[in-house]
Amino acid sequence: DADVTQTPRNRITKTGKRIMLECSQTKGHDRMYWYRQDPGLGLRLIYYSFDVKDINKGEISDGYSVSRQAQAKFSLSLESAIPNQTALYFCATSDLGTSGGFTDTQYFGPGTRLTVL
Amino acid sequence: GIQVEQSPPDLILQEGANSTLRCNFSDSVNNLQWFHQNPWGQLINLFYIPSGTKQNGRLSATTVATERYSLLYISSSQTTDSGVYFCAVGRGANSKLTFGKGITLSVRP
Image 1 (cartoon, rainbow over the protein chains, first blue to last red):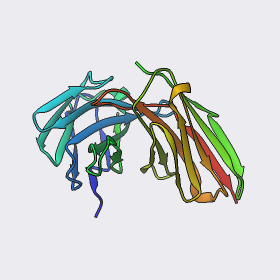
Image 2: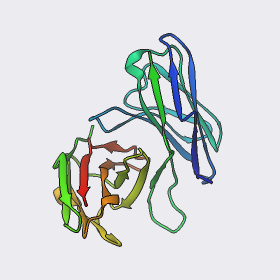
Image 3: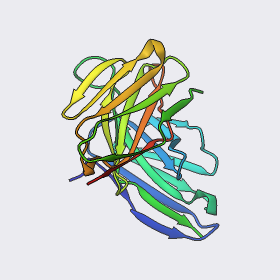
Image 4: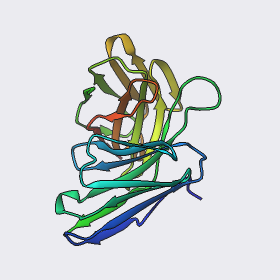
């Protein structure tokens, strides 16, 4: 089984609809992230959470909200979807590492392809 | 914020050739990672390498933190190496990653 899962994998919705993307992980990591990827722009950070009670905005948080329901679950919501939110969305997790030293290697889910019409 | 530039933007290789991918960054960092995005979209972490050199099979990476660049070497390339390679950097104890725009590699059989 995959360590980081995202649901749904594909979603088509209409302008103005509310939509939630879900992420679950079995890696036991404290840190979770949401990114969006647009062609030619790389990945940009939307929100991140370093533990259940910690939520932080990334560089492009406008129009999005998140919920950290548990250590293993981190959801991204689009309250009122618009066409320029059409993108590939990734969830990622990381941990500082247990073998000594600071690593914070990030592990990505398979992505959710969202289309807003 | 930190600026990350990757070069070249596109690279076409014949199977078996070697290549070097470059990542320049604008400020000091304590977190640098290389990722490979395969043609199906999956992102795989290749290296965590804020400084020094690491090797994993045909891939190796070197980061010269004082000169603010990192290099990813691919030797004896295979068609399965095709995809987009991203460099991402961060700084501080709770570092968020800033990604470059990626290098698209196509390996021809």
